Length: 308
Image 1 (cartoon, one colour):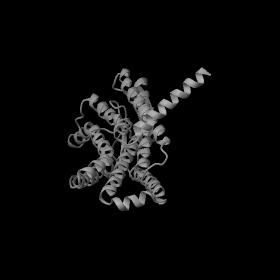
Image 2: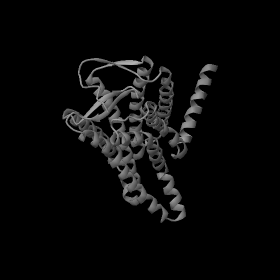
Image 3: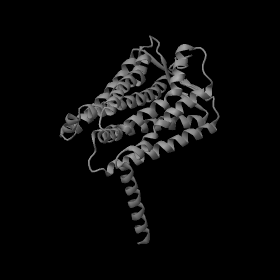
Image 4: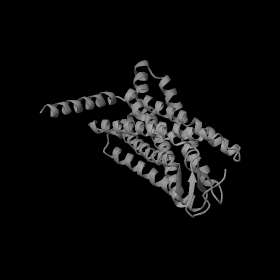
């Protein structure tokens, strides 16, 4: 893989895909914006948010960050070229890495939350009913955001990660830095490997616990964890093409996959940022009812105002 961003001088980069491909990005963005808007509107109608709802709202933040990235990507596709300096490319690349890692970390927090609710139900119930549960959850989210931001800055500062413009994505993509690849390896560990191991371990334990429960308790507990299990399953399915690309890059760095595959891999990951609203609609208690009630009331008010 060649690094095309060595010089800080402003350079013009050409896109290797036709402009009509931007239709895919626009469709993805509409889906992301609509899905996450419905999530925000619905949660605002809840009388009291639970701990898991705060984590889900944090996922809305990362999804909207992906929306911003994909909007930039669509603009580049339509223009067919872009003028970049090294700092701008680093900023674009860091934005993508930050959104990816934060999504994985929030998923891990959701898995831990569900694991505690199943393995230690009494302690969990006491915690969520306490005044400190909201403060603790917000503090965790703030801490992981700050920690991830510091990690990215340190890796970039010590030149352990760098970014180059891939004309087939088209966006700035991470690669080994000038002084090593520790930053890229750490990014992969934090975004994929460690979250996956933690989530697999915790959710496997949850499933084992559920199997040992009585039928009535089992059904109730499975309903409580179904949303998180489905969210994680879809997330990792969407990451399969990107995983193939990453492994390909490590095994054969001088032979790139077909250009269309890079674009496809990125857009499948982008697709995941709009899936959450669909999952919540079908699996989250009261979500569907609250959403439909909100839409119905909005139409009723609209008709009333028009008639007057």
